[in-house]
Image 1 (tube, rainbow, N blue to C red):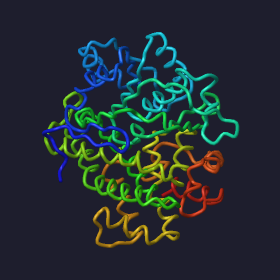
Image 2 (image 1 turned 135 degrees about the vertical axis):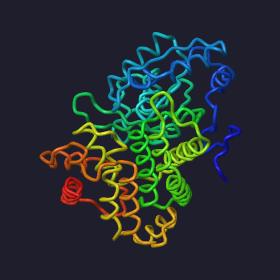
Image 3 (image 1 turned 90 degrees about the vertical axis):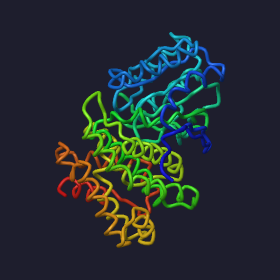
Image 4 (image 1 turned 60 degrees about the vertical axis):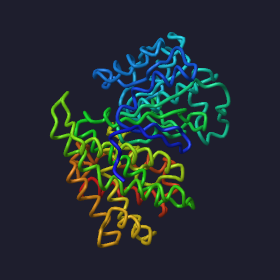
Length: 399
């Protein structure tokens, strides 16, 4: 069945998701019905320059609620962004957080949920920390409005925030960080530039592929991952193509574009649900590229994905048969699936190598250090040593 253009649909998994054209117009009525009076919109600096945050503020205001906007979020969120957001939350005397944007705004919004009414510092609540504090206090009402189809964090229960000084990424996890409701409106993604569409789309694809390959038994997540991969195979290249057809402030509004964006939004949501199973070495390679070179996370994933898939193929060849089937390949092999990723990257404009993305090879040892310390590769289907990471980075630099 095609993505519907004539209605907003609802499904719960477990978060209440309202998906469809115009879903954003329901936000004010929804918040009022939940007893919210003073919501704070949390968004990033770049999105704040566009009309979308003001439109959402107006929709909420028309429901009789006192709304304010905090837009102090950068591309790679750090603890200082969270602290500034919490100050804005209390200054507004807010009782709800509306996270609007991509992964950065979502992550900062979730971290603010913790720090709005919990004591101590944010990283006291780091997941897996031996003496870590539990997220067991009151959290504000929380909803999410994705404007990109990538991280899937709008339906997730974790947040990733970097330390300002060391740039090390910290993960905070709690079911209390789940949004009460998600408003997935494809119209909010129509104006995304082609490069952002491509990078965020490869982020979603990486979540789904790594979830399916993760070394654990979780057939529910496996099924979601395969369907999400299928949706991306039918929509991401089209989304990028339509993005190139539009002009700034005047995106392509064709039904085909809206359907493709709707499929991508759902695929990203599915990735956010599925990767509770685990991720893998692609993410452990990508996180350091963001830390050391400030790469967009989705771009880093897109570059590293084919190299790590080549590495993983010998460990779980039978899983690659299902991946090849999901994207409609006649040749159901790992080699064919890796080539499909490479061809997709070329079609949507993802650089073939790290060097083509503008980074120099002299920091491989630093990248390896961060990659080894990253928790994601613990679930990779093939164990990854420091020497393996160095080989993967060397290949990804040179192609």
